[in-house]
Image 1 (cartoon, each protein chain N blue to C red):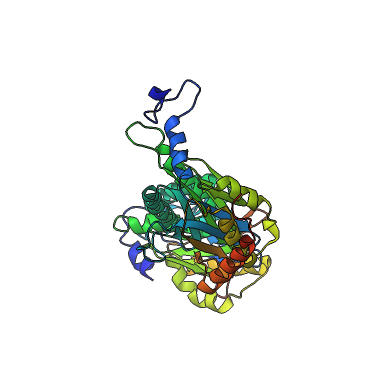
Image 2: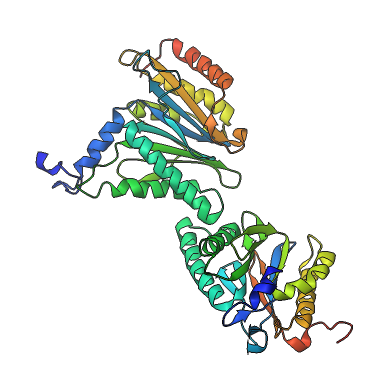
Length: 217
Length: 247
């Protein structure tokens, strides 16, 4: 909720946004819309990328001030990459989320960006972490974020099941994004989805007109 | 030869840094400490020489906790060792703060080794006169054992010994099939080895400090409980009482 109220106070370009990440049996799907707006009346980009890859099997979705989010993810990407080389092994998703959390918490006065970190690692498999505005870190089986998320809490809570198959999970994520983008004026464009598994990554892009349609569309 | 050994920033003509070698001699003057890695954990044993009857029992510990899952046994100048244990603790704590999980032992050992190594580069400071053995247990990576010496290198081991009787201890350790043993079996063998290498003639009284970390302690490094230690010491005394005390 707080992100929705905060968005209008963000100077410059914000990602009034819908982002989500959902674990399924064997992987995690991370998704977002692609609209960047100024003040809720001007769409500054219809095709922005909100899914930032921070390591081979770890992605972050960004919400809030676009400038802040890009700066934080750039710093986090460097730190995680260095950490991984020092450890001589791929980083844990928890470690990546912690790096983001430290950046958000230590700079909370200046920053206005929230993230969802999701990925796969050898130790715990698929995981989803929320890093909220002030630097809270929380692990959840799935999570939704951004201004558009307020419109789909009911849908997500009702329709999520643990241990879904990849197809069921894709359908769940696509529907959730479509519903949010349909009601939130600052979310829209195309739906970006990335499926992360041990084997690799799969990008799915669904243009706005190909999204699932609901009763009044 | 004497003029090349005054500072750590000088090499001798035959390519040695004498200060570092002297630091290792300081470790060899200290009483023995051993660490052995087995199938499901790591056990440390330290021969703690009791220099005065006035010492409280259990004081002057030589085994430290660096983090919940990491233990450290030391030999050499104890003051150096204690200050380095603080360095190791900060390293582990910062790692957890930044990355949200337990520090892997290989990484901790390399970081401490890097720190120790830094003190072998300058004439303004002296090298640390102590060696440590680090041990940890993690459900996914299993038991790990690393040793850091005053020159600032660290290696992983299945079993290692530092201090005055390290050669004798190493010989005994090599006889063990540690990869097939459990912590409970190993505790007795570690106690036995300390009793074997202890020199009754030169050093009279000693206290055996035993600690372990493994599946048996749920990944937490702690001193071996009193009853198990007493049982291990009894076993050790039995095995060494038949005349074969020192080698």
